[in-house]
Image 1 (cartoon, rainbow, N blue to C red):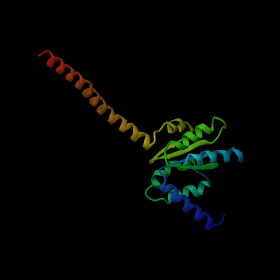
Image 2 (image 1 turned 180 degrees about the vertical axis):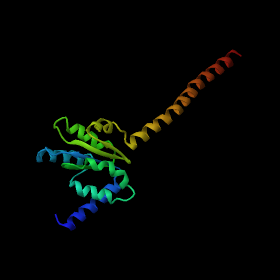
Image 3 (image 1 turned 90 degrees about the vertical axis):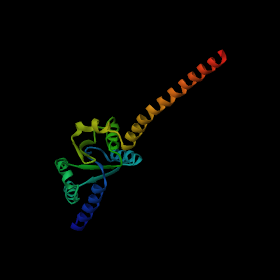
Image 4 (image 1 turned 135 degrees about the vertical axis):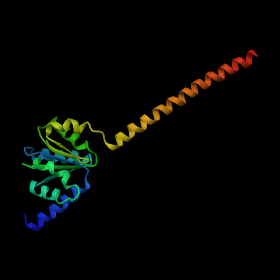
Length: 175
């Protein structure tokens, strides 16, 4: 790879790292071409971009990001061996794909994950990452929680309103 090609790759990765709130580093070194193709297909269906990167180029790209560069320092130790990067729009999507894929195959193994400026290191963090809720899920839960008391009040008013009307009607009939 020539120096200009390396610079181009670093620039592309820099844009990805600076524009992404969620990305994962994984080791998929022992997967066959067929298995990698299957993993890529699953990721494509889920809206996850997969890219195999050279560790030194990935680190240089992260170092050149600027204001986020300090956030990435912890991830440098994960840049050993073959590295596959998963870029996603939701924090838990790559973890769920990796978990599902590993029901059939032994890899990919999670090296590190960057989730909204938090760094998760090691494969033991996979379950934690898969259980994270997306922004949309959290907003939905909050809306549901906010609607619940209002629904209870309206329901109580309707039921007691019927009771009050019944009592008034009974009193009117007696009088």
